[in-house]
Length: 357
Image 1 (cartoon, helix red, strand yellow):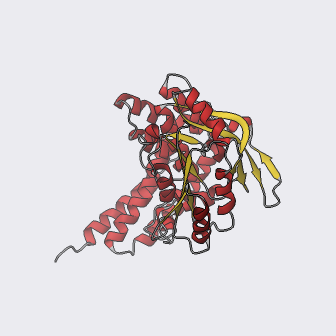
Image 2 (cartoon, one colour):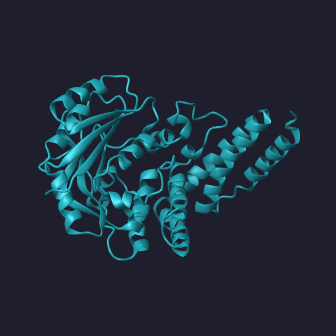
Image 3 (cartoon, helix red, strand yellow):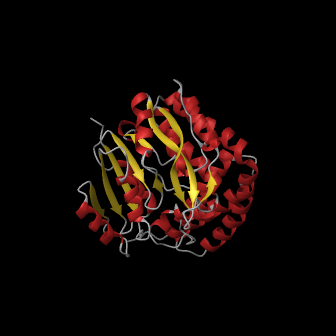
């Protein structure tokens, strides 16, 4: 008997691609799988298409969110839904080759210490032609008995989505902290996952990514809690991690390692390892982000000075969070003047607040 796999497809307004994405799963040589489409309050024909497909194949089910909860939270549902031993979160536009599941499962069943396996990938366009082949260096091979070594490998090498959209062992997924509203949350999830077991890949290019990745700044804005809830991401009380996407990606690892299900000493070891690894990869770009953020922080602090006291305090909290990230990842960037301006803003808010009933 083949172990069952929960394939959970998360989608919002995916009418143009959802049918093809589901067909690529139905066409797998591995037959023992179920498909749950988790619809994020689509306003197009997505659900109508899925209903029609479900009427023809009992392995397909549709779950509808009453409201749009944003891609991060809907992706979380795709990770956790179901009860099968293996789970495969799936986008609604990318495709997989017919032998994708069988090849990946051969690794997972043959290597019990492996908690996730993915496949090599290519990018294709609307004309169905391959426009890009992901380099071999984008594949993860985080193996061996040392959890810290595996997590360091992920931090140093993870680059592209094909390495994320694999098949996961549910026992390891259940150990993960909830997905965070942070740029680079996928990086951090895989780094934590590596603490709980090995991550491997198959060399066959059986993951087909439609159009490739989006620009980093666009992805970062999409990870703002305000954007997720259809609120303006540049509101003066909105979170600001989107404005420093690379710094926030590194900082997200520190946040996640602080919650990891390992011994306290191991958590601290991994938190301390983050900055050196990401500085080696992105230092120049992160320093540019920090410099730009200081101007943004000054402008927002000035606007908050005329806001209602509670809004002032909350806005100051958002700025302070990013300053914390900067100090931990690029400490040579002096943010003392921004801190002093925040202290003055907070002091003034506390002085002028009237909490009388």
